[in-house]
Length: 84
Image (tube, rainbow, N blue to C red; front, side, top):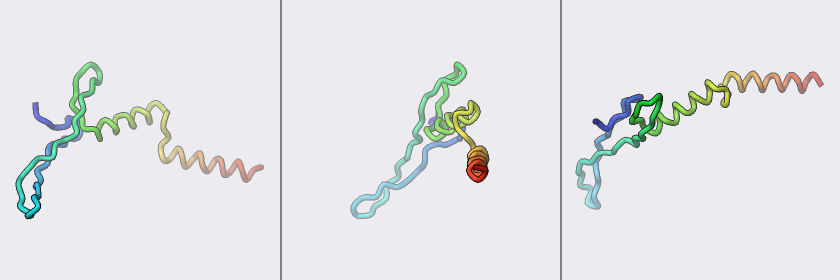
């Protein structure tokens, strides 16, 4: 099983280690993979993908407001303040 995120396709990045004399040697920067069980299946997702899924779930369930909903609520509050 490769170390890639199923959702975003992120995988290891190749970078350089730099010594005190500035000599370069290759190394890999791994992906922050997390194992999550979603819908009865085991998925290896990056931490960023997990955060995105949590946020999308909160938006769908109404726990979190979108930018448009926040803006509408702000203008409604302003109108109510002026009407007083």
